[in-house]
Image 1 (cartoon, rainbow, N blue to C red):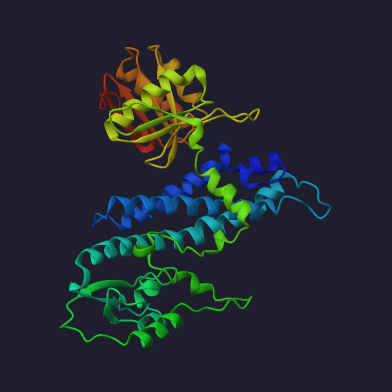
Image 2: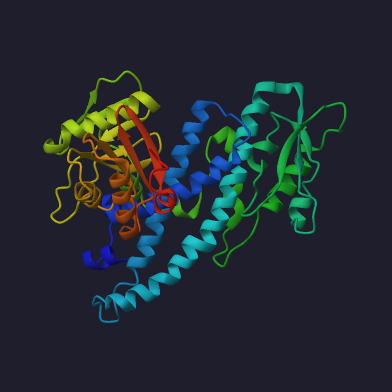
Length: 399
C-alpha cells in the first residue's frame, strides 16, 4: 500500500518492485502449499508437476495484479488528488479481506482438489481403458443438488464428459472421481450426464454471464490447477504480456555457470561486487539440491533495493550473504543488509562460535517481521532454520 501511494499509482511493470513481488510470492507460497497437500499421497510425472507449479505461480501474478489494480483505483479523491495515506490504507484493507481471506480460502481449497484430480488423472491414463471412471460426491447434506445429480456417473476414460466435468466443479467443491471395473457398474448415458454437468456449472451473474463456466476444464489433461478462463486473466494482451514477462526472465541476458548438478545463471547486470560470493552460494546449493538459480540484475531505479537471486525450483526470491568476521555485530549487519528478504542464505567463513551466531540470528529475526527462513552454510554443510525455530531455539542445541 505504501509503495503504491509513494508511486502515485500502479502499473503492471511495477510487479518487479520488491514490495509487490512480495505479494505475488506470498500468494504463490500459500497456494503452492494447497497444491502440495493435494498431491501428498501421489507422485505425478515430473513434467506435469512442473506445469502445475508454473500455473500456480502465474495465477498468483494475475491475482496480485487484479488486487493492486483495484487498490490503485482507491488512490484518488473526487478532485483527482492523491488521498492521505491513512484514508487510502483503510479502504484497501477491505480489499485485503476480500482477496486474501475470502477469495484466497476458496482458491486454496480449489488448489487441493484440482491437484488431487490432476495427479489421479495421470494414474488413470497409465491404466488406459482397463477401468471406467466414476464421479462421486462426499455424500453429506452439504453436497450441492446439481453435483448430487452427477453422483455415480460412470463413463470410459476417453468420454468427452471428463474433458469438462472432472472435479472440482466449483469453489469449495469436494467431489472426486475414482476408477471402477467396467463389469461392476453400468455405463451412464454420456449426453445426459454432460447436460447435467452443464447445469452444475451454470450460475448467471448480474451481467448475464455464466460465472461458473470457468470450471469446465480437466486439471489432468490441461495440466493446470486453476481455471484457464478465470476472471483474473481477463486483461488486455498488453497487460497480459507485461505480467507474464514480469514472471519470466530474458534468457539472452543470462550466462550459465558450470555446475555438477542443478543450474546457475548470472545476469549481465548482476552486482559485480557480489558476483563471487553469490555464485559460490548458488553453485553450492545447486550442486547439493539440484536447484535452479538466476542471479538477478541490480535495480536501475534509484532507492529500490535489488534481490540477489531467484530460486527457480522453489519459485522464491533469496538474499545471499557472506560472513568473514566472528562477531555478533557482523552477523547482524549481514542479515540487516539483506534488503528485507523473506529467505536469506548466509555463508559462514569466520570461526564464530554457535552461541554468538544463534544469538545474533535470534535478535535480528525479532526485529525483522518479514524473515521466514535463514539457511546457514558452514564447513561444507548447511541447514535451514524457520522463523519459528530461530525465535524458539535455545543456545547450544543447534551445534
